[in-house]
Amino acid sequence: RASVLDAVRVSDNSTVVLRRAATWSDEIPILQCLERLRSDPRNRAPPLLDIIPLSTSDDELLVVIPLLRVYYDPPFSCPRQVLHAVVQFLEASSRRQCQTVYIYLRPFQMMQFLHEHRIAHRDFCTYNLMLDPTDLFSEGFHFVMPDFSADGQTVGLNYRDRVDVPAIRYFVIDFGLSTHGQALVTGVYGADKTVPELSWEIPYNPFKVDVYQFGRVIMHDMVELYSGLECLRTLAERMTQPDPSRRPTATEALEHVRFMLANLASTELQREIWPTTYSRLIFTERPRPPRQRCC
Image 1: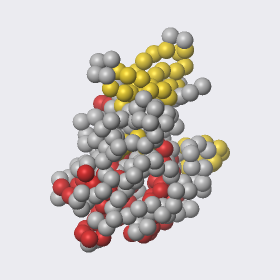
Image 2: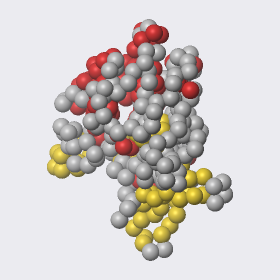
Image 3: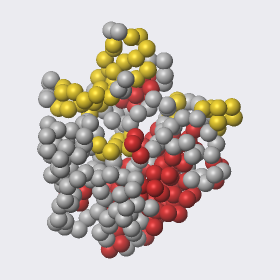
Image 4: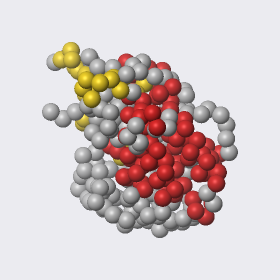
């Protein structure tokens, strides 16, 4: 059975996503908790638009969220955009900063925010990291075939380069494996089974698992996929240490990115990059738009 389905919300004709969620898991309480914290700008959980009970089952509900798109598509075009994405998944500081630095310190946002509220995601992997496509794909796209137009008839999409969208919002989805308030857990779950400590019998720290999983995302989706992102290799290697005690916390990883932003030359942050291989990530089949200005 499919676990997700797109639909149209009648009130505003917007495309939304319906996702099945088990009533016996921690997912619904966690989503409701995160929704109550919506006013916190560090919160990168997607808006919870509705929860729909099923008349045919007491074991599942339908969760309604906005239509999102996997975070890596369209491709990044300069290192600053990559750091922007990384920080939104990790950063949680509410202190005011220089606006440029603040914008690019958000992707570490969600992990630190979750951990601050004692929530471990436990599947902090590529296909659970999303972006708001509204300003990038003004004509929309097909939910099942994202390389196609919204009606599914035309392959190839018109899109805006990330450089032309001043503040892309990133989100973390799918809290089906998440736990709240548990310092130690067991189980071999998640898309990334390479986490060394995963075990059915020996308890492990789920927060360190989040760090490892996102470290793998940084290494495989960014450092090894794009030329010119070696500045992130040291961070990724620290986050994926086999010994969980040697991995940084989300806060420490964020400080590493802040240091890079403060010390990398502007010309280095704005240098154009392009994927060197398509072996892991498949981008939409359309020509890349010309860059109109520096990022």
